[in-house]
Image (tube, rainbow, N blue to C red; front, side):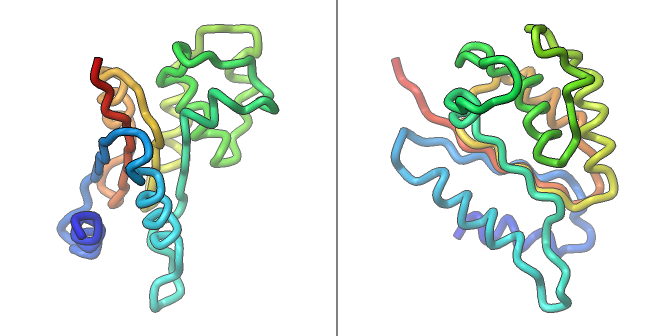
Length: 164
């Protein structure tokens, strides 16, 4: 019900700011499933035939770690950082990052990737779902600060609550 209220707010004309929705919980409680439901629901056409969110981007860090057919270099769990996530977001939008990010490099030009992502999203009502996110707070803030505001963009994030 809480997610329904959040997404109902997108219809309010005065509410054009970037929304960030976080879902935190232990493994297996259904975080990804509930996000999948809303991700699919928010891609269906409204009464006037327009889709609510275009584009819609889904990046799962667990898929990045386990993708054997990944064309880029192998990514270890500790290497999943903001650059890798932004690169995946760009590729889901159809942007070829091969010329931007060398295959043999362990360092990415993050500023260039963030700028390209911003160009792809500016002027659009976008939905980004970051599943199983493990970014540090500074990286998450850097991503959010580089996304366009004023177009009713929304970010949904799932993360695991880990206790040691």
